[in-house]
Length: 379
Length: 256
Ligand SMILES: Nc1ncnc2c1ncn2[C@@H]1O[C@H](COP(=O)(O)OP(=O)(O)O)[C@@H](O)[C@H]1O
Ligand SMILES: [Mg+2]
Image 1 (cartoon, rainbow over the protein chains, first blue to last red):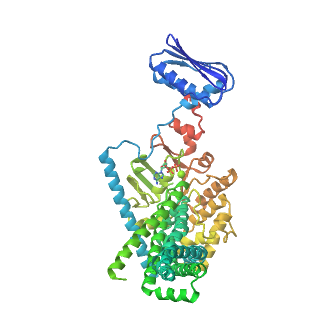
Image 2 (cartoon, helix red, strand yellow):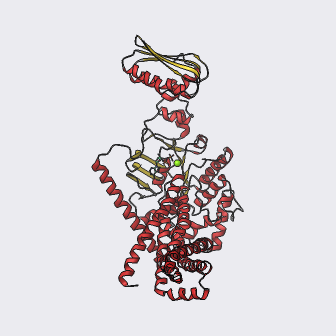
Image 3 (tube, rainbow over the protein chains, first blue to last red):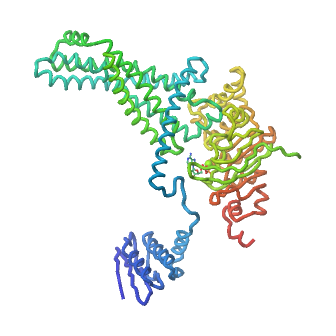
């Protein structure tokens, strides 16, 4: 005869096997029982040709789901191995719960179930990718044709939506943009100063900061802030409209989502970005001057003279151009992710994250492309 | 009474990707009917509505509204049909950045040549039809769930539609608001002759407003019953329908 005992705080479970009869005996008050071994034991015996499983709960006091689990597994393994298992002696409520748990209503199936082989998976991925790319290109095309409609005066864009978007990505963003660019200018100056001081050339901090901010850093900082602040808000707002079926309502009313949702946001951001970039350039230079004047003891006029000398209108315009491109990228990424959001709350979070990540990635890609082009053109 | 078919669904199969929700559905909705599409949660009722309104293409089959098959119609043809139909979504789907009056004005501005002043007055009229007189300048966030549904209904009625679709009108409403909405549906049907298609699993609504119905069985992926819901209760064609209409009184069915 085999015997195994598992002790719980105030109770015990015995599993014994004798003449083909597996007996599971519960006694005492059992709570939070770790029944893994007991269940393994029961399964082992029933697979080895036991004829009956006996569940004895006569001495069982209080119990919780962990006991129920052992009972449930015992009944299940009895069923699987076609052996007898009588549950009519269990406490009545436990019997009911076992019945509930065993009642199979429906075979669980869901979209995408089924096994695929390598080729099928590969094919699927290819088709999905092609569809996705087509969708993105169609979206970009649609947005430009919406812009065309707008300037031809045939758009249903509401001016009130445009002003709301503009006030959100313009005036309300000034504070954070000013602060961050001031700090970035400060950091640039500091990092530069340490190196330049070695050659006694700390005055060139002024040139470094001016060129750095105007050419690229101002636009990049504004881009990243606006992707996190405004692009994500676009995705979340439009995504929530999907969840609330507002997008369906728009479509069934025959109102273009492009005109109604995308265009006001896109135009507002593209208009605001160059202005914010200019502000960032200026604040960054101010941050550099702060370090130069107060920490490196460069006279203010001297600093300013070097800064102005380093300022090139070409650099400045390249920065602004970056800003405009980033405006398109952020607005399109935000709106695209929002419009393609799923239908539950979870997917709004996913869409928001995707909008920021994709916007940042495409901004970096765009910067690379613009830099190469400028190199070729000699700007 | 001669019955005119308004919506004719033939051989319809709907699903997403490889996943089939419903196979080979056939049914007709007559003009002036209050037609109920019932079935358990997740059996594809909302998806059916999206197919009927042309938002989602079915995998197979035809949906003929009037005499246009919307599964193969051009965008402009679908648009013409949509002008003649109104939809009340499960959550109301009001645009949260606009007042109630602006929400209702939107389809009017899009499809009619009324002056702004007339549009404003019409919006006010539609709001009073659904019992929201004077709420013109409220935003959706300022009113209760039941009121949102009523406002959504006002917007659905803006263009005097021939068909109005409802997705679970009583979901999330207390019994009184839900009863009031049912009464409103019946009144609209009587006074305007509007054909009404209601997706619901609310038994009290089904029995009090429906005069024709289909039952979608989510497990069998088929329509397993059709007809007047009160008749179906008297003569249930199968166990699932009986259980559904009696809130799960399945044991009695076996004895019947
Ligand atoms: N866009 C979609 N893509 C994939 N599956 C979907 C989509 N919409 C709904 N489903 C699935 O279809 C099933 C039926 O959904 P739905 O039509 O909303 O049911 P009901 O309205 O009857 O509760 C659900 O299992 C849901 O997960
Ligand atoms: Mg639904």
